Image (cartoon, rainbow, N blue to C red):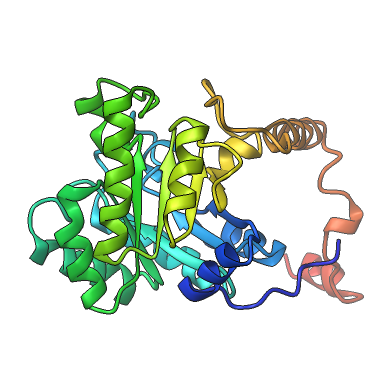
Length: 284
């Protein structure tokens, strides 16, 4: 495979992609190895999502994820990715409590984690936080529609914006977070026609996940798109490969060959210099 000779991606390059109608690509990553592979392939942006709570740490939702979790995983990703625009989620209650907390915690993700930008959920209610973080020279990606940190308020993971009132609110929130200084917005699980309208009205890029093909870009959780996720897979998560099946095949073969004694074979071992083993035996 020939790796993509990628350029450094920034908030400014993503904006230029929107302006030139060039689709933006974003995937999640949570560790050095995966980030390195994704970056080599030429993805524009890597998101260290608080989805790590479910796909990496085994929680039922994103709410238990801490700042320390996010910094730890963001730092690993930032060491592995050299060209992608690195966006780190601000976890639940790291920015809702006050503007001060929002700026401090955003700063930690940049200083300690190596993020280039932070992402936070919500519309008008977090515009003050967005403005303050941006004023501190940290780019902010907003997140509207299905915001997983509001799972208890929504009563589950449900599509947002199907009716007029909620669709109008999402559109108004999108305009407000743009005015507050957000450099992009993730639209999750909103009807495709609504996402298209928002994309047309905003000057900043829209990144869709379950929001149709008319967004300026797309993001997926890499475990979903590579067939690594166990159990329910969201409707929007196309499987581009079945890596999970391949892993199971390889692990099963390893177990079988180890148990039968065919692994390790001669080519997997190292040799002593001539005469060493004889001398060691003579000394016994």
